[in-house]
Length: 352
Length: 253
Image (cartoon, rainbow over all chains, first blue to last red; front, side, top):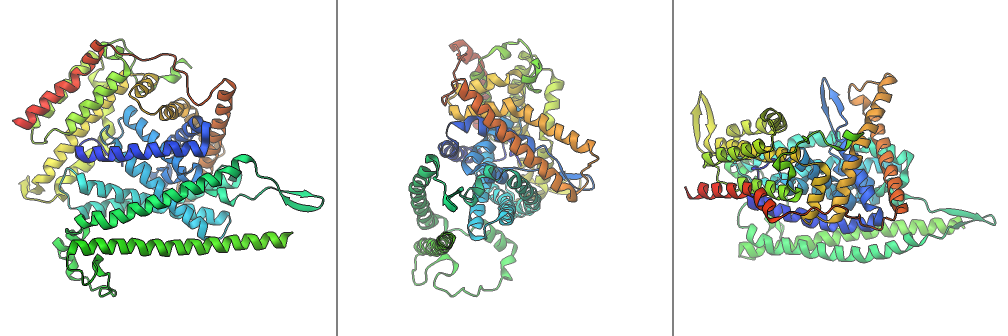
């Protein structure tokens, strides 16, 4: 799904180019944190691996075959930042050398195939690994789900870009239907291959899998007949502190961004129905839809009751929605983490 | 071994286009494609002129037409997509040979085909007249982050090594009687992919150690600075500026 030149109009290509450049700048810094001065050779070799593995054909049936896209695999194996860099470099080289994907469409291609797949798959993967019980089986399951979702997510991102800046007036519903339908199928193949590959690597060199970093056993030494935790070396001791500080800024930035998007941007956007609703309305699909069970809740249809101005109420509802989601999500994660640290504490006391 | 570092798309030669500094060529190709993409699709003659411009460049670079046309085959999937457009697009319809086609969709298909083909042709000309290493130097001169250029250069340098490793693994599988026929054999292929990852990563670690032992401290030494004179810049930028004139005419006429 390398987008050629002329598929997306010039302004949208420029905007996605800026988005891609920003993401690559962030990933360059992040990859330096993940790999320090090993970044260049290791990321280069992993990019070469992604490039090679895209040529590995997986026969489906009767002459048809598929191949790996690699975004999810890269994110899980080497981490999200290095993953974004590797896939972006592969796309850049494919665009310049093999004329696969247009030069002006490079921003679009990097945004949906490198950034969206990597970020979505890594977020899903980390979330699942945190929730599922520890073990190799849940790693494989998590990478299956992560890869399964990453491909349709890229299709959705492409559809959005097409909706904003597509050069042909194809109904957005048709584009979405075709893209997502096809890519759900591709995603199933991608998921199976990614899960099997991650499983194969975890079986041999679990220390190389970035996504399994937390699952590594601490080194314990038997000193005078007692098991003692080996002192961690300096690198691992300082890393979590830095990570925590940056995680807080990340969290705050994310929260502010979603609040701004929900409250301010929807202020402008909410006046028009979105693409799918519009298609549904045009085709009369929505005549048959029944009222949702919660349609008389105070936040129904993304608006706050008793607030007359449609835009204001939409924005307000967005802010309230984001707030509720953040509170609920944080509560779940807090509870899970608390339980896990509790388990660890209990295990270590019983071990001594 | 000597041929190992020249990519298959490169066509050795000594034409004036081959001799231009790489970053001027990259800038020219990119500028040309940007101009092409921002041309209104109703100005059909403009795209003809663009094609003539590219043909002139190919002639100066002594790239034969057959070579160029064969490379253009890469965009066949999009031709298929473009052919679908008139059937699915919205808007008023017109009857052609008994088929009801959307006018808007026809324009869209033309748009994608024309601009896509010109873009692919420009990239193919760039790749066939510029060596890989030169391309990377050019990217560095155009202020791409050095780390990104280093990653790209390692990918290019070891791409063939990793691909050969994969080929050897395939030969090993096949010499043991394995033949991938369907979904049931994915496990074996995925294990090969996993092994390939481990080998690539470990090779990366070895390369890093070798670099460290030769004094690498985070940046690569630049031994041949690519510089361009004013004359070379103006020679290379003739293409995008000629295209820009055509584009202006396309908007005004």
